[in-house]
Amino acid sequence: MFCIKCGAPVPDDVKFCPRCGAPIVKASPSQRPVPPDQRNGVPTPSASRDASAAVGTSSTSPKRAGVGLSRSVIAGAAVVLVAALGAGIFLAWPQGEGGTDAVSSASGSPEGGSSAGALPDTAPEEAPEQFEFVISQVDNAAFPEVTLYVQLLAEDGSAAENLASEKVHITEVGADGTEYNATVSQLAPFAKGDPMSINLVVDQSGSMDAIGKMDGAKTAALGFVDELLASDGTQAEVTAFDDTVSNRQPFTESRELLASAIDALEPDGETALNDALYWALQRANLKSGARMVIAFTDGAENASYYSAEDVAELSRLTGIPVYIIGIGDDVEYGLLNDLAQRCHGGYYEVDERDVAVSLREIYDAIYADQLSMMRIVFTSQCQDATDAYRSVRASYGEEGALQAETTFEYVPVDAVDSFATQAHTDDYVLADSASRVYSESELEQMSLWELYLARNEIFARHGRGFKNQDLVEHFATRTWYSEQYTPEEFDALPNQFSKIELENIETMHAVETAHNSPYLVTAK
Image 1 (cartoon, rainbow, N blue to C red):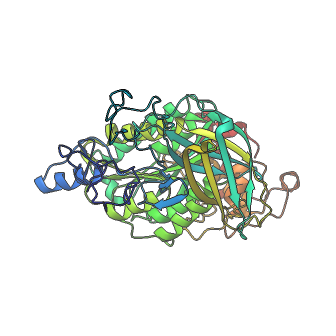
Image 2 (cartoon, rainbow, N blue to C red):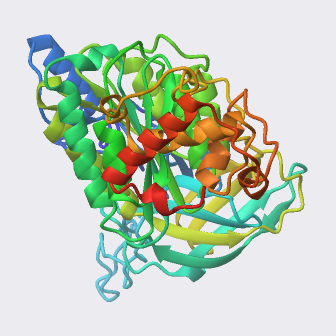
Image 3 (tube, one colour):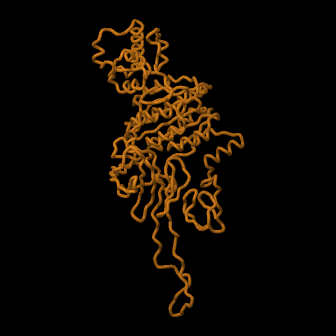
């Protein structure tokens, strides 16, 4: 016997498929199983990829290899673990046998009017609609209040409608097995204007220097930024990597600053993807609300301190999903796909001949996926330690008629140090700004954030403190920096700068002024 949903062979005595969790319906002789590499007549991403490779063809349309946390099927009191499908946990409950056996009489009486095969007077009760329960991310910034970003999907993949908050149940399981029912205060759709922080991780390694590749990536990123910033509450950060990681632009809602960071990207060096992802997760963890990391790369990892396992564990610890986009044929499909799934996100591929269009389509698809989320807000009642993983059961429905259920783990207070990193970064923007004079044309190649940093870097060398939070966070990660004066104390001192330093400060300020940099009106 075969599962009619996924085509997997199943024993005759089981009720649920051990691969996909679907209820097993005994097929009539005319029914045939769906091949394992096909769903509803459509090849899966892996099958499409293998078929394309076999015939030597490629597609310019984006291909996605998965999304969501690992999914599980739970029927009644029996829990059936199934294969991980992206970042959510799939739940299916029994649909019932679909009817009652017909009643027959061994000795029918002419007076009695009994008829063999008569149906019962009442139809069987219809089972409640079943949903797929996908948890995308966990926001613990306001613990003991916790926000889950979830999707409840109908069988056809569409978002479930008319959901009721009173049907949401959250149960935390203590280390000793004690169950604590959390207080659920909200079930609401994610809306434009709700806080969302996206870290765009951009590959600027030497291989991106191929004709049209970097230009296409810039075009896609700029278009995506325009769409993001059309919604109030959405902010983005640009992280670039080659053999080092650079924070090209901290989180901002300024289109001008983000565009400046993207325009300044120049291909060079090797590929430290893992370091960039780790750094981006640390940075995103400073924010509350919906958070995600979206990265693209065109080559193999070859220059990082951190491993893929380090990245996956930090994603799990922070509850922040990572989406990875592979460009061209030189990417390590298996490794990147595996990493994206372990990071609760998804993996996509684009043809390097059509980077601008395909990359933008993927950006938009990921963003739309996030906008389709629901927020579940609950208050924890569990008294266990807050620095260890705890198990949580989330369900939807009424007692005895649950429609979806999933389990997940999270750390209430993750204690991630966002300023301590082993990622390879440059300690200085301009290491020699105290010993050589920079021209305007040289400074014009830098982003507005880099100019702002380079100018304040000169002040930082002399021990000045800062008020701007972006500067505070940046210099907190510099090994050479030590704050010796408050801004007011430093500004009251006699001139601390050399002639070369003063000339560079003036030229940098002039370039910033010419570009009307938003940083000129922020606190120093």
